[in-house]
Amino acid sequence: MGAAVSNWRLARAVSRTGQLGVVSGTGLDQVFGRRLQDGDPEGHIRRALNAFPFREMAQRLLDAYFIPGGKPLGTPYKPLPMHVVEGGRRTQEMCIAANFVEVFLAREGHTQPVGINYLEKIQLPHLPSLYGAMLAGVAVVIMGAGIPVEIPGVLDALARHAPVSYPVQIGAAAANDIYRMEFDPGAFKEGTDTLAPLLRPDFLPIVAADALATMLWRRSNGAVAGFIVEGPRAGGHNAPPRGPLKLTGNGQPIYGPRDVVDLSVMRHLGVPFWLAGCYGSPERLRAALAEGAAGVQVGTAFALCVESGLTPELRQALVRKALDGDARVFTDPAASPTGFPFKVAQLEGTLSAPDVYQRRRRSCDLGFLRKLFRRANGSIGYRCPAEPEAAYLAKGGQAADSVGRKCLCNALTANVGLAQLLDNGSHEQPLLTLGDDFADVGRFCRPGQVDYTAEDVIRILLAS
Image (cartoon, rainbow, N blue to C red; front, top):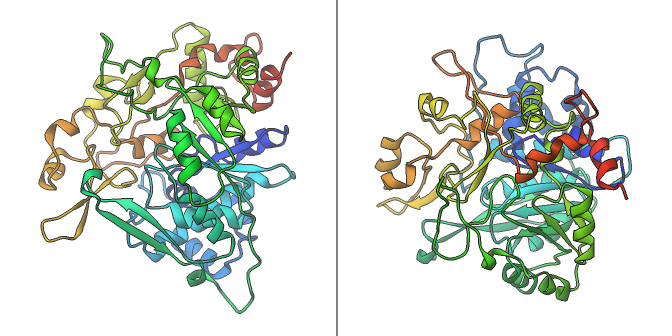
């Protein structure tokens, strides 16, 4: 859910009720680095690192990024290296430690399972991120926005601390140009002690089509424990409509009968499935169970509860919108550099406002959504449709592909209070994503209040 919106606090709060709390694995190395630069004021990161098995690695990262008392006011965050296909020791160490810390903290103080969610579109951090989460005992790995047929085999190998590789696409899929990233856990081992085997987490891919579920079930190189079936009303990235893209009068993608998952196929597979996309109500939960689902995945309601990583100002402003009957979500076909439709909650002062978007000077300094391409000399390059247009065109990008693109990397970190300071003294601006049931989150508020808890959400969802 975003970047650090479903953070360890939220996941822990949900898991402690007996449900599955899931932390967002998106951009955790950047979140980890910026939290350290803010001084880790409550000491949570340092406490988690005390349990981290690689003590020398933890100290290196603290020496590089921890600032006692926090960075001076009016100074930018120190940049972290961007991910590349060859890996890179520092980026891999950041991913291992960051994912460990987030899962460790989510699991702290209870014995219930915790999961983690990744985007297949953000492939370069996959291997060290999964390893870090598994070192902390993550029980479930969820992954959407792609076709992750090799992730089950990766989980099998990482549980044994064995070397792994993973394919990334270079250029258009038709070119069949694949680079295999490599990661060896043994390269990070310290001392002579033998590491015990790790828990192999259950793998739950997110699918928007029954045909994709069937293909993953048949072709995955390891066990798939079930599926999250996500419809186009869910927040974040949506699968594109099947067939030629058609838009509504105000520019949103039109979904039709071909985009409806045949749940009889899901039932026939014989594994659990959960339904997602506007299932944040008791009525929709009952409907999902009646269809044979094991349960539902809920995002929007939890994104706006007090344990969420969203800044209180943004969270409360959005809840007030819902209470006032002014909650609006626009499914933007152009905003995401991935090319997938992206749900954007409309809120003044954020990049959802055209004037705020137009004022932002394009940059690409985090780079999670960059796409790989082959340079003329055969080497691998990186480009993003949301980077400065001149740079994108110089790398062979097409001008039409850059129109309307928004830097989700910087916007999502701004959502959780980690906005980068810019040269002109301003900060990167937020861009919020919520599902279509944003309008109904008022059901979780007590009279006269805009704050509600994760426990409130679960209590109301489970009401008979």
